[in-house]
Picture (spheres, rainbow, N blue to C red):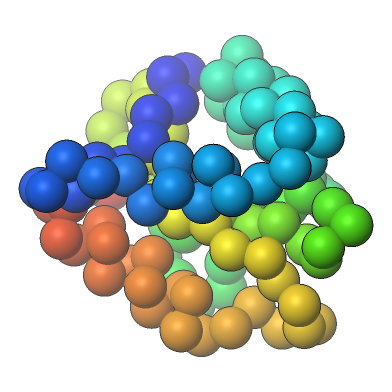
Length: 113
C-alpha cells in the first residue's frame, strides 16, 4: 500500500509541516509506524484507531514526551493511504476542531474515499 502526504492546491502539505515540528526521536517512531502501514496496509490498536462518527478517518497514535502525537489519515482509492494532518494531543478526547480541520483539508484537496 502506498502512503502519501495530502497536498493542497497551493502545493503545501499540512502533515509535512507538522512532521517538521517534531523532535528526531518522535519523528523516527512516526516513520517506523508509517513503514508498517505501507508494508502491511494497516496498523493494530493502539498504534491506529478509526475515528467514531467520521466516515473513513483514522488516526495514527504515537507517544512522545510532549504528549500524544496524532496523524489523521484515510484509505483512498486503490492501495493508497493519504496522511492529512497532525497535532499533539494534550487531553483525553480528540479535539473536534482537529477532526473538522482534517475533514476540511480532505475536501479542499479533493480526495475521494
